[in-house]
Image (cartoon, rainbow, N blue to C red):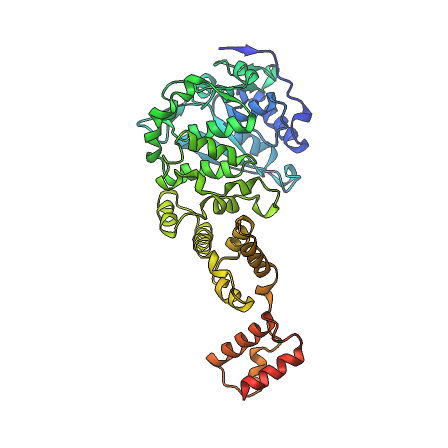
Length: 419
């Protein structure tokens, strides 16, 4: 066990309401004789000088007992997940001062983990803080700051994580780390780019042996890792690195050819592309419909994202058909596509003529409607039926194509249609 001098955990390290909450938990843990720690990524970011918006708290003992003591004294309610030794404290209203701040606090009992087979979810049992640190993914995340009593600020560093953190090195804790949990190589690449760290050679050498076990990961677990990568500002370099390490093909063969993607669009300043769903579309819009379906079987996209991906794939495959069409024909062609898919594809398409057509449709043409309505046709004595749609479609096309430019000209055209 290695203890370092106290870390400068001060009021300025956290938002005001989270600092106040931390003090309440610390005081209750101290009274109850429960060693309390901030652990993992929170410590890493604190050492790197990043302001924490939240924190992970681990109790060496019964986290549920601490949560109930907090609720008893300060209000709120508690739920427990006994299998994993965790408790969630739903904060009372007086401790929630910002709608952007979480209204719950997770308290976790220190535990050890074992894996029955590669890629399995871990089997957990109560343990010490030493056990808890040894279950972490990388040494830089195997750090803890003690909070209770006179121990406040003491750094626990059993695995020399501080040295790796100061030297910018990412290192696993043991040789079977990636085999036990094949999501870890994806986090490794994410941290490498985010913090501009270097992966230890011995750690990098462990990836090939673990690569076959990626296929055993559930759809939810591997898609979650990709979601987190697409949330990062430097997602492009992360995906390139994963491709170079053959970690995209390990998920599904259709991801092997990274160059098929126009993913460089992500590096633009277009605000409409800086969200996760847009980035999924930018990445996958060049796949065929069959490839999208096959990838969906592996990753289980949400229904809304799958709809956008299907639409973007089909649109991308048929873009050249837009050339030479009149505006009304463009509208008829594009109306069946997802608006979100159109928005993303129009930003990514390379052909300037096609991009202009998509932009005009998205910003202008799809909103065009004739002045005449179905109610007007009914007042003219026309029986409701398919003819309503035919007439209104013809009037709309006239506006789009410049045949009519005023309400009076539309009335003249309507009269001719009704004769």
